[in-house]
Image (cartoon, rainbow, N blue to C red):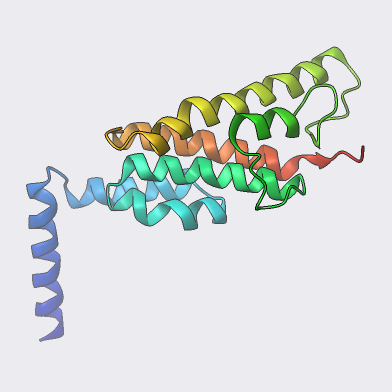
Length: 167
C-alpha cells in the first residue's frame, strides 16, 4: 500500500511540474545546479527556499543584504550603525585605508585588486541590492537569480578571506 501511495504522490508531483512546463528531470537538475554552485552555508540558509519557491527578486535582495551584514560584522561595525550599502563598502574596502584587506597592497596590481573589489562591492549595493529593496515592482528571472547568487557567492568568499586591517 505504501509503495502505491508514494507512486501516486510522485505522479501528482510530476503532473504539477508538467503544468509549469518543468519535467521532474529538469527540476532535479535545477536543484543539483543550485546545490553545486551555492555552497556557502549562510547564503544557502538565506536563499535556498526562496529560490525554489520562485521568489527570484527577493532571493537576490536577501543575498546582497547578507553581504552587507557580513562586511559590517567582519569590519567590526556595530549592527545598529546606519553605515550600509555602497558607503559601507567604500569604507571597508578602501584602497588607501581599508578596514578589510584583500591582499598586502604591496604592488600596483594588489592596490588595483583592492580598488576593483571596493568598486564591485559598492556597485552591487547600488545596482543590485537597492533596486530590489526599493522597487516593489522589480522582477527577476530564475536565470538572473542564479547568476547573481553565484556572484554573491564569490563576493562572500572574498569577505571571508579578507584580513582585518589594524589601523
